[in-house]
Length: 257
Image (cartoon, rainbow, N blue to C red; front, side, top):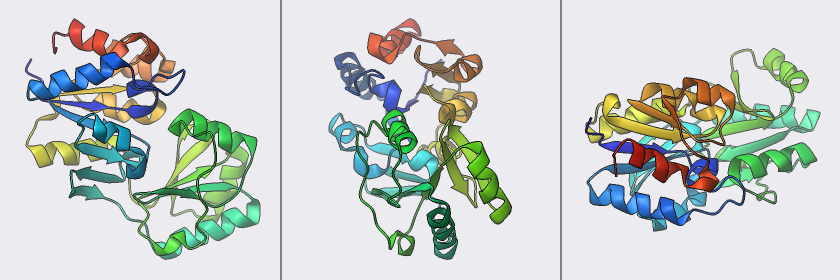
């Protein structure tokens, strides 16, 4: 099959899941795909401001904020800004209960709550070793993804307080707080529509639970060897780990490169 586009999760997929670096093999893969006329898209939980190293590799299309904000070069493809008053209400409730919140504009900020579980989650999901800046007036900006850091017991309070919102867990300690649906798969559909490409002509690589819908959507869904079992079970193929040139291995196996 003539695949025309490849969607790559970033942390733990493009990057080595052990040290956060980008393997040389993956850098060469991206160059090869582009030389063959195959489009390369980063589909990440990161905000756009944390994608500079990927842009330097030649990637021009970014699905960021877990699907909440999509850009091709300077052209906006898709965005889901949240209601500012609603964000403020959730912020006030989180302050009352001392829960961490993160806010995705093109930048990334938090509400200033610190604890070991939050820092561990930031490391596992965004390869961050320290907290980002705090912006007490962030609710005045367009926010494309709002995330809550909490265990299930704490989340129950939010579900009771905000019954019109959806709390969608994608990490053991992180949930998307949603009024409208935000997902990588929805963002991929918008991106495919933008380029005029059928979903069966698309490949996706991922390693986390927020990649499940993405792998299920496309023609060929590939889980990294370091992925969790849930993702591996929905993948069409499980490749080697990101620390073991897994992207290159899979694309060669399917004779894409």
